[in-house]
Length: 505
Image 1 (cartoon, rainbow, N blue to C red):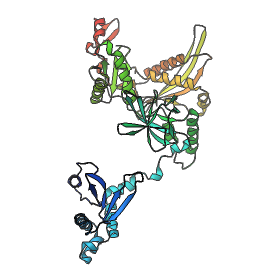
Image 2: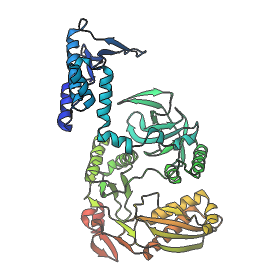
Image 3: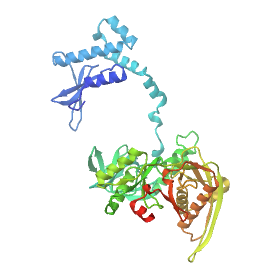
Image 4: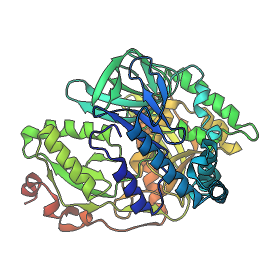
């Protein structure tokens, strides 16, 4: 109602036509000199005036026929219409109107009671009470951070002057400018820059922002949308231990699954549905295109940019044709690069049908260093869609618990990386393996063995397990071949860049 072109009559008419229900007007806008200065309370027949000064006081002034006859007639007519509409839905109010033979005899308390009754009788309100959670049932996870910061990054935007701007929703603690934060998902600490409060497109710099507010932070290079941040790694571990302790109690509102989800590897981003190649118009725009894709990936986690080692092309993956077209338009408008998109392809997947377990032992010597790693893994099919980052599971059985507990974090990271690489290309049609979990049963490593050797061994074992299980999937169009030279299969020429086609020919 604070807009110059607003109309209460048209708004009420639109609601009545679309929802096919009568509108109860409890207040009317009070306009002076083209500006909204308050409202008129139909029930109490008072003017509620807003003071726009720093005190922000509310003043109530009674409406009388002598002081403002035009407004008095409008309020009286609207109040009569309100009672008339309510009496058709509330029998008690209807009997009161009939017995008094006048709408003026109905008191404010009678109208409030009638509005309360007809509102509660609506099935929608019943559903709100029956099915939606109460404020007392709010998530209790973030209270485990005590006085420490707990904030979730929900948006990343790149500004030409300020650089990357990360938007945070603060759940607990205070966000200060130029403070050091720790990303639980990225497992990295970063120094923040300036702190802003967003007012539409305007950013106002502040020193600190408390919980329950939205903070805009500059200077972050690693934090992505969906990351949970706190003051330090110690604070994150302390909060996790506290929540796990609460989850072990009977009838606790904090569940272990919720704790693992909160401290997991990031938001559940669906796998891409379509993909296509993307190329700059010339080599002069290659650097600008790479910068654009890197920044857009931070802003949109559902966008994937990969490099195809077979063709040397950059592959753009997204949720659909419109999604990829929007990305192309943004690259053109914001980065001035007229990128070329290749033919759109469907991103098919592969999935296992049965559980397979195997072990790999690597015992070799590279230079003067002995490299030894012994790993036992299982590929387990699941009915649910398992996304990137959730594939590796740890064997919690009594036989494997002691061995798993002694694995160093850097070795676990190498194992996870090896599993991710191993499921990138399936054995049947070369597509990503999904709907599967890879469980780690046993791990042994020799002194001085590098993380790259561990990751390579795990990748080899995962691919070996994939060959043993029965995979199912559908072929991608991009896997069609046009010629075979020396047992190497090349993709169709229309899927290749001009440089690669000239090399093949």
